[in-house]
Amino acid sequence: MSVKQDIKVAVDAVVFGYESKGNLSILLIKRGIEPFKNSWALPGGLVLENESLEDAVKRELKEETGVTIDYLEQLYSFGKPNRDPRNRVISISYFGLVKPNHFTIKADTDAQEAQWFSVDNLPNLAFDHQTIFEMAKSRLQSKLTYQPIGFDLLNKEFPFSDLEHLYTSILEKEIDRRNFRKKIMSYGILEETNKMSQKGSGRPAKLFKFNTTKYDSLLKEGFHFEIKFV
Amino acid sequence: MSVKQDIKVAVDAVVFGYESKGNLSILLIKRGIEPFKNSWALPGGLVLENESLEDAVKRELKEETGVTIDYLEQLYSFGKPNRDPRNRVISISYFGLVKPNHFTIKADTDAQEAQWFSVDNLPNLAFDHQTIFEMAKSRLQSKLTYQPIGFDLLNKEFPFSDLEHLYTSILEKEIDRRNFRKKIMSYGILEETNKMSQKGSGRPAKLFKFNTTKYDSLLKEGFHFEIKFV
DNA sequence: TTATATTTGTGTTGATAATACACAAAATAT
DNA sequence: ATATTTTGTGTATTATCAACACAAATATAA
View 1 (cartoon, rainbow over the protein chains, first blue to last red):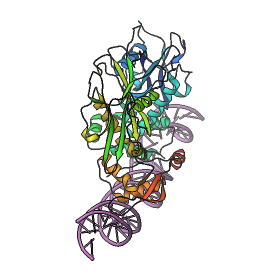
View 2: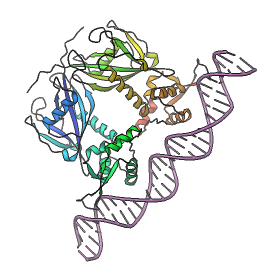
View 3: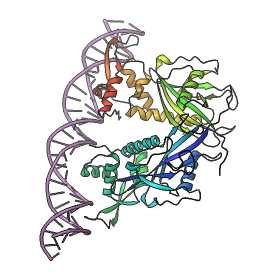
């Protein structure tokens, strides 16, 4: 019983960016063709015959947005028969993070419009992209608590308070600043630089950087990153 | 630049079963055709045009093994260009659990051979199925610690020690029996029956059952299941 | 220039949860 | 009847979590 199968395979990416003072955004592109022409959608597209899924996402992101991705992992695969009105398309979705110094959009010739949208002010999204976004947001929230991915949303050097604000705004919870700092510091994965933050109203802050090497070596010893809240 | 895409979409399932005293197994089928003819492989196959991914897994499992699944979730999608030597096939893999009273294999007319294999004595697997299995095993190990899925590997009523052995053998770690029991009991998700285990050499044990309703209501109050170890 | 507002930086204490630890009771097998 | 296996249970110590407030450094406004 061999059935001729005609299913298209696409990838889509939910790419998060974070700016100081609680502004979490994702990258969207404006569709140039039907269906959902002129709607906003997640960047992505069909996988080519000879590229891996991850290569496909990276290529599409480059073509459509020009943004350099700092962290990428597979999210989930969506395959309901009618998620695309034309024909059957299954989409393997990816979860990405971008540091602020990589925010700049330079779309290729392929260029539809690409733009950052604050997550709490999203336009209507094409296809089932709203569902995909929601899963990505919830993945982001839960990952923050057991993996130090927050640092992939901050520049290499950052004041400690940026990390605080990142956690409170993304998890939508208050934290005790002293306990939070004590906890993070106790892990020894932050390295103090001798620089200070410049701008800003208030006392200047020391800049820290995340020490990847240290984190990796701790992992090998069975270290377990975990941030719980009130 | 529209490229004609010809990629096949398949599903595969890593289905775990657990028997008393530390025997963790997965379901495999013997392939009837090339490539990898007569090799063992994960149950699965091509997705039909009009069925969802999850329906496809369930159908394949029924056709190929006849086993009733007690827990099913998506695992990961594998899409390297040459994972199938014939043509490009991406596989959406699933993670399943089966209670002992559903172990019996009754393969359909479709029937290749199907069989349970102890996880520490697996044959060589077709395609990249070894990789898929390893990811599933590691998912099982980590899920055990933060979600009460162990109960989907036990019959409805079970002696407490079955749960103990399940944890120690799957996580390959020793536990303190008293502390483990104290912890699980403190959650109030186990209900005591008035039955006792019969067979077995040693003191008979009370039988418990997992109270799904209670667990669900606790979840709503922000309850967080967690089992840590030495 | 003085006062006000904003943000950074820091310790201690009490409460809660995790860990370490051993032996008697009930059954089966010899 | 004796030995073996498995179940069932409590306490004391230690580590972690949670609650809590104020001074120092700078920018802004009066």
